[in-house]
Image: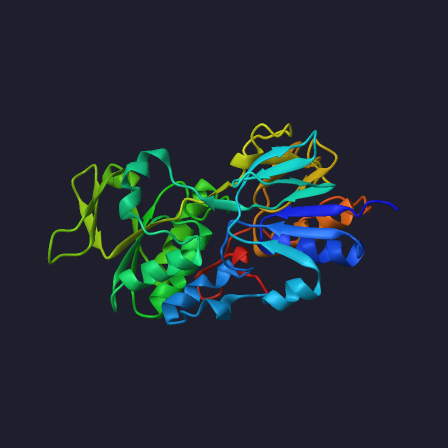
Length: 346
């Protein structure tokens, strides 16, 4: 009797869960395992701004209940860290020393918030937004009609800014090269998009015009909790300071695995890495495109979900190339506000 194939998926976001669902459908007799650092089952991170509207019960953010995984025979291993992948032996090692064998491995570990090195010393004074607990902490730190200072201004941060403004908070954006990331905005168009942010109610400060950000301090007693200081001596005070400088692929555990890595895992158009048994999907990988003759990242909920499904299909015998499913151009609405296709996740 042939040994049952074991498909392992690293990552429990939209790519990982879509892949596991497709693997189960296309290979019903196989073992399917999802390994994730998250303590929560799959939840929609794009919904985190709801926390600021008073939604604090994590169960209302969960996409699939525990019963879904039991019914579909998908082993979900939460709060589990992969520390090493051996592509030759087809094994991965967990932090607690357990070794698992895989017949196919899909790396869908996503990406974490990126923080420029020059700001790393101020990390203790910054509020994150990458996890449910982070969202709760920053929401608790914002008083009624509070003031949030956003650094960078990628599309995740701008999406949050819309919610904060809608519920009565003030938002100041310290703009720079990461503003609108991952959209690529031409230099000649930048001013009209900045003006659109201002029409939305965001106060935009150009960091370069103020001599760049030099320090972030804890506010003095009786004053705002945070103070951002610029090279020209000017400053901004607020209740929270939140960095939004895009994301960096989460792939430290793949170093030394034997597959090619640039900024992300390098994959062919069928999402296969340089090892035939290892695939990648989502924000963690760069896909080769013949049209541009280079490896490209593709972001957005729709793209990431489609990658998860495609990788699973190809693992189970298909031979289909990646085709982007989401427009990546920043848009201006009729009323002069900006809209990002990356805010669409239904």
